[in-house]
Length: 288
Image (cartoon, rainbow, N blue to C red; front, side, top):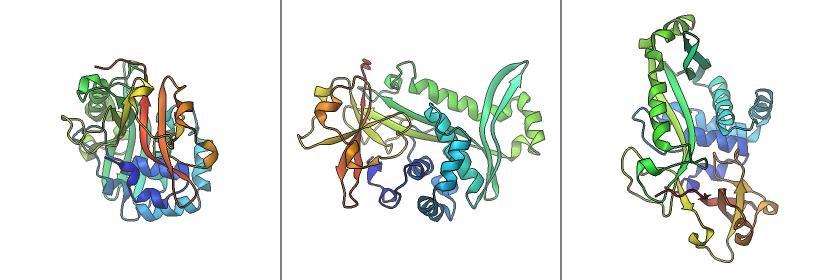
Protein backbone atom coordinates (compact mmCIF):
# COMPACT_ATOMS: atom_id res chain seq x y z
CA UNK A 1 0.00 0.00 0.00
CA UNK A 2 1.30 3.46 -0.87
CA UNK A 3 0.44 5.21 2.40
CA UNK A 4 2.63 8.09 1.17
CA UNK A 5 -0.18 9.19 -1.18
CA UNK A 6 -2.83 9.55 1.54
CA UNK A 7 -4.48 13.00 1.22
CA UNK A 8 -3.61 13.81 4.84
CA UNK A 9 0.03 14.40 3.86
CA UNK A 10 -0.96 17.22 1.52
CA UNK A 11 -2.50 19.12 4.45
CA UNK A 12 -0.14 18.55 7.39
CA UNK A 13 3.27 20.25 7.37
CA UNK A 14 4.79 20.00 10.86
CA UNK A 15 6.80 16.82 11.40
CA UNK A 16 5.53 16.11 14.93
CA UNK A 17 1.91 16.52 13.82
CA UNK A 18 2.52 14.26 10.82
CA UNK A 19 4.04 11.69 13.18
CA UNK A 20 1.00 11.87 15.45
CA UNK A 21 -1.33 11.55 12.45
CA UNK A 22 0.51 8.43 11.34
CA UNK A 23 0.07 6.83 14.76
CA UNK A 24 -3.64 7.53 14.49
CA UNK A 25 -4.28 6.53 10.88
CA UNK A 26 -1.60 4.19 9.47
CA UNK A 27 -2.51 0.58 8.61
CA UNK A 28 -1.02 -2.10 10.89
CA UNK A 29 1.80 -4.28 9.48
CA UNK A 30 0.07 -7.36 10.85
CA UNK A 31 -3.44 -8.12 12.08
CA UNK A 32 -3.73 -8.70 15.81
CA UNK A 33 -7.51 -9.28 15.54
CA UNK A 34 -7.87 -6.57 18.19
CA UNK A 35 -7.12 -3.39 16.20
CA UNK A 36 -8.89 -0.30 17.39
CA UNK A 37 -10.65 1.37 14.45
CA UNK A 38 -9.10 4.57 13.14
CA UNK A 39 -12.49 6.25 13.45
CA UNK A 40 -12.47 5.57 17.21
CA UNK A 41 -8.96 6.95 17.65
CA UNK A 42 -9.69 10.08 15.64
CA UNK A 43 -13.21 10.79 16.85
CA UNK A 44 -15.60 13.08 14.99
CA UNK A 45 -13.37 16.15 15.41
CA UNK A 46 -9.98 14.44 15.12
CA UNK A 47 -8.95 15.65 11.69
CA UNK A 48 -9.91 19.24 12.53
CA UNK A 49 -7.90 18.97 15.73
CA UNK A 50 -4.85 17.76 13.79
CA UNK A 51 -5.17 20.69 11.39
CA UNK A 52 -5.35 23.13 14.29
CA UNK A 53 -2.27 21.52 15.86
CA UNK A 54 -0.44 21.86 12.57
CA UNK A 55 -1.18 25.59 12.57
CA UNK A 56 -0.27 26.03 16.24
CA UNK A 57 2.01 23.15 17.35
CA UNK A 58 3.70 24.99 20.24
CA UNK A 59 1.86 23.11 23.01
CA UNK A 60 2.81 19.77 21.47
CA UNK A 61 6.46 20.83 21.12
CA UNK A 62 6.57 21.94 24.75
CA UNK A 63 4.84 18.77 25.93
CA UNK A 64 7.36 16.53 24.16
CA UNK A 65 10.27 18.53 25.51
CA UNK A 66 8.93 18.47 29.07
CA UNK A 67 8.12 14.77 29.08
CA UNK A 68 11.20 13.39 27.33
CA UNK A 69 9.56 12.81 23.99
CA UNK A 70 12.82 13.33 22.16
CA UNK A 71 14.66 10.57 23.99
CA UNK A 72 16.67 8.08 21.98
CA UNK A 73 13.95 5.43 21.58
CA UNK A 74 11.30 5.62 18.90
CA UNK A 75 8.83 3.82 21.18
CA UNK A 76 9.10 6.53 23.85
CA UNK A 77 8.57 9.27 21.29
CA UNK A 78 5.48 7.47 19.93
CA UNK A 79 4.07 6.93 23.43
CA UNK A 80 4.46 10.61 24.30
CA UNK A 81 2.71 11.67 21.10
CA UNK A 82 -0.25 9.40 21.80
CA UNK A 83 -0.37 10.48 25.45
CA UNK A 84 -0.70 14.08 24.32
CA UNK A 85 -3.52 13.07 22.00
CA UNK A 86 -5.42 11.22 24.71
CA UNK A 87 -5.01 14.20 27.05
CA UNK A 88 -6.22 16.79 24.54
CA UNK A 89 -8.43 15.19 21.88
CA UNK A 90 -12.06 16.35 22.31
CA UNK A 91 -13.49 12.83 22.63
CA UNK A 92 -10.78 11.41 24.90
CA UNK A 93 -10.02 11.06 28.62
CA UNK A 94 -6.70 9.53 29.67
CA UNK A 95 -7.15 7.34 32.76
CA UNK A 96 -3.68 5.76 33.06
CA UNK A 97 -0.43 5.42 31.15
CA UNK A 98 2.41 2.92 31.52
CA UNK A 99 1.12 1.32 34.71
CA UNK A 100 3.19 -1.69 35.73
CA UNK A 101 1.59 -4.91 36.95
CA UNK A 102 3.74 -6.83 39.43
CA UNK A 103 3.47 -10.08 41.34
CA UNK A 104 5.95 -11.19 44.00
CA UNK A 105 8.28 -8.33 42.97
CA UNK A 106 8.24 -9.60 39.38
CA UNK A 107 6.92 -7.32 36.61
CA UNK A 108 4.32 -9.14 34.54
CA UNK A 109 3.89 -6.25 32.10
CA UNK A 110 2.47 -2.75 31.90
CA UNK A 111 -0.73 -1.18 30.63
CA UNK A 112 0.41 1.14 27.84
CA UNK A 113 -2.80 3.18 28.01
CA UNK A 114 -6.16 3.01 29.72
CA UNK A 115 -8.31 5.63 28.08
CA UNK A 116 -11.93 6.55 27.60
CA UNK A 117 -12.86 7.30 24.00
CA UNK A 118 -16.39 8.63 23.74
CA UNK A 119 -18.38 6.29 26.02
CA UNK A 120 -16.07 3.26 25.93
CA UNK A 121 -13.01 2.47 28.07
CA UNK A 122 -10.05 0.81 26.38
CA UNK A 123 -6.88 -0.91 27.42
CA UNK A 124 -4.60 -0.04 24.48
CA UNK A 125 -1.25 -1.59 23.60
CA UNK A 126 1.06 0.31 21.25
CA UNK A 127 3.81 -1.07 18.98
CA UNK A 128 5.82 0.76 16.31
CA UNK A 129 7.79 -1.80 14.32
CA UNK A 130 9.69 -1.97 11.03
CA UNK A 131 10.46 -5.44 9.68
CA UNK A 132 12.08 -6.67 6.50
CA UNK A 133 12.55 -10.02 4.78
CA UNK A 134 13.55 -11.49 1.44
CA UNK A 135 10.36 -13.57 1.53
CA UNK A 136 6.82 -12.99 2.73
CA UNK A 137 7.02 -15.70 5.38
CA UNK A 138 6.11 -14.51 8.86
CA UNK A 139 9.04 -16.17 10.63
CA UNK A 140 11.60 -14.42 8.40
CA UNK A 141 10.74 -10.79 9.19
CA UNK A 142 13.27 -9.03 11.42
CA UNK A 143 14.11 -5.45 12.30
CA UNK A 144 17.36 -3.59 11.76
CA UNK A 145 18.42 -5.41 14.91
CA UNK A 146 18.22 -9.07 13.79
CA UNK A 147 17.17 -10.19 17.27
CA UNK A 148 13.98 -8.12 16.89
CA UNK A 149 11.65 -10.61 15.21
CA UNK A 150 8.10 -9.94 14.08
CA UNK A 151 6.77 -13.28 15.26
CA UNK A 152 8.01 -12.63 18.81
CA UNK A 153 6.48 -9.15 18.92
CA UNK A 154 3.19 -10.51 17.63
CA UNK A 155 3.02 -12.97 20.54
CA UNK A 156 4.11 -10.27 23.01
CA UNK A 157 1.24 -7.99 21.98
CA UNK A 158 -1.27 -10.78 22.57
CA UNK A 159 0.24 -11.42 26.00
CA UNK A 160 0.01 -7.72 26.88
CA UNK A 161 -3.62 -7.53 25.78
CA UNK A 162 -4.44 -10.25 28.33
CA UNK A 163 -2.75 -8.35 31.16
CA UNK A 164 -5.95 -7.14 32.80
CA UNK A 165 -7.03 -10.75 33.37
CA UNK A 166 -4.05 -11.35 35.67
CA UNK A 167 -5.06 -11.49 39.36
CA UNK A 168 -2.25 -9.03 40.09
CA UNK A 169 -4.03 -6.40 37.95
CA UNK A 170 -7.21 -6.46 40.03
CA UNK A 171 -6.02 -3.97 42.66
CA UNK A 172 -4.58 -1.63 40.03
CA UNK A 173 -7.91 -1.50 38.24
CA UNK A 174 -9.71 -1.04 41.57
CA UNK A 175 -7.49 1.97 42.33
CA UNK A 176 -8.62 3.40 38.99
CA UNK A 177 -12.28 2.71 39.90
CA UNK A 178 -12.44 0.12 37.13
CA UNK A 179 -13.26 -3.54 36.76
CA UNK A 180 -11.87 -5.94 34.19
CA UNK A 181 -15.26 -6.32 32.53
CA UNK A 182 -15.39 -2.59 31.75
CA UNK A 183 -12.32 -2.70 29.54
CA UNK A 184 -12.18 -3.27 25.82
CA UNK A 185 -8.76 -4.53 24.76
CA UNK A 186 -7.25 -3.19 21.56
CA UNK A 187 -3.93 -2.72 19.78
CA UNK A 188 -2.35 0.20 17.95
CA UNK A 189 0.27 -1.45 15.75
CA UNK A 190 2.13 0.87 13.40
CA UNK A 191 5.17 0.56 11.16
CA UNK A 192 6.13 -0.98 7.84
CA UNK A 193 6.95 -4.24 6.10
CA UNK A 194 9.89 -4.33 3.68
CA UNK A 195 10.35 -6.89 0.90
CA UNK A 196 12.28 -7.00 -2.39
CA UNK A 197 8.99 -5.94 -4.02
CA UNK A 198 5.85 -4.66 -2.28
CA UNK A 199 3.14 -7.34 -2.39
CA UNK A 200 -0.62 -7.08 -2.63
CA UNK A 201 -1.21 -10.53 -1.16
CA UNK A 202 0.46 -11.57 2.07
CA UNK A 203 -0.19 -14.61 4.26
CA UNK A 204 -2.16 -13.98 7.45
CA UNK A 205 -1.64 -12.45 9.92
CA UNK A 206 0.51 -10.12 7.77
CA UNK A 207 -1.59 -7.25 6.46
CA UNK A 208 -1.82 -7.04 2.67
CA UNK A 209 -2.90 -3.40 3.07
CA UNK A 210 0.12 -2.54 5.18
CA UNK A 211 2.50 0.33 4.50
CA UNK A 212 5.25 -1.37 2.50
CA UNK A 213 8.76 -0.56 1.32
CA UNK A 214 11.78 -2.14 -0.37
CA UNK A 215 14.15 -4.49 1.44
CA UNK A 216 17.74 -4.65 0.19
CA UNK A 217 20.92 -6.28 1.46
CA UNK A 218 23.07 -4.85 -1.34
CA UNK A 219 22.50 -1.44 -2.89
CA UNK A 220 22.85 -2.96 -6.36
CA UNK A 221 19.47 -4.63 -5.73
CA UNK A 222 17.68 -1.26 -5.79
CA UNK A 223 17.12 0.16 -9.25
CA UNK A 224 16.64 3.89 -9.66
CA UNK A 225 17.28 6.66 -12.16
CA UNK A 226 20.25 9.03 -12.06
CA UNK A 227 17.85 11.82 -11.11
CA UNK A 228 16.49 10.02 -8.04
CA UNK A 229 16.97 11.81 -4.73
CA UNK A 230 16.96 10.47 -1.19
CA UNK A 231 16.74 11.41 2.47
CA UNK A 232 18.48 9.43 5.20
CA UNK A 233 16.03 8.79 8.04
CA UNK A 234 17.21 8.89 11.63
CA UNK A 235 15.54 6.63 14.18
CA UNK A 236 12.98 9.27 15.24
CA UNK A 237 11.96 9.95 11.61
CA UNK A 238 10.34 6.59 10.88
CA UNK A 239 6.73 7.29 11.86
CA UNK A 240 5.43 9.39 8.95
CA UNK A 241 6.37 10.14 5.33
CA UNK A 242 9.24 12.61 5.21
CA UNK A 243 8.68 16.22 4.12
CA UNK A 244 12.02 18.02 3.92
CA UNK A 245 13.84 20.99 2.44
CA UNK A 246 16.24 20.69 -0.48
CA UNK A 247 19.36 21.04 1.68
CA UNK A 248 18.65 17.63 3.26
CA UNK A 249 18.48 15.54 0.09
CA UNK A 250 21.29 13.29 -1.12
CA UNK A 251 22.13 11.29 -4.26
CA UNK A 252 22.22 7.55 -4.78
CA UNK A 253 26.01 7.55 -4.70
CA UNK A 254 25.86 9.09 -1.24
CA UNK A 255 23.39 6.61 0.24
CA UNK A 256 25.42 3.70 -1.15
CA UNK A 257 27.81 4.39 1.72
CA UNK A 258 25.14 3.35 4.23
CA UNK A 259 25.59 -0.21 5.47
CA UNK A 260 22.38 -0.39 7.49
CA UNK A 261 19.41 1.89 8.02
CA UNK A 262 16.36 3.40 6.37
CA UNK A 263 16.28 5.79 3.42
CA UNK A 264 13.36 7.67 1.87
CA UNK A 265 13.03 8.20 -1.87
CA UNK A 266 11.84 11.80 -2.25
CA UNK A 267 10.31 13.94 -4.99
CA UNK A 268 9.88 17.71 -5.15
CA UNK A 269 6.32 19.04 -5.07
CA UNK A 270 4.64 22.36 -5.72
CA UNK A 271 5.08 23.51 -2.10
CA UNK A 272 8.86 23.61 -2.63
CA UNK A 273 9.49 20.68 -0.28
CA UNK A 274 10.68 17.19 -1.05
CA UNK A 275 8.17 14.48 -0.14
CA UNK A 276 8.75 10.80 0.53
CA UNK A 277 7.29 8.52 -2.14
CA UNK A 278 8.97 5.25 -1.19
CA UNK A 279 11.15 3.83 1.58
CA UNK A 280 14.06 1.42 1.68
CA UNK A 281 15.34 -0.76 4.50
CA UNK A 282 19.02 -1.56 4.01
CA UNK A 283 20.43 -4.34 6.15
CA UNK A 284 23.35 -6.74 6.16
CA UNK A 285 21.17 -9.50 7.63
CA UNK A 286 20.54 -12.59 5.55
CA UNK A 287 16.82 -13.26 5.80
CA UNK A 288 15.77 -16.19 3.64
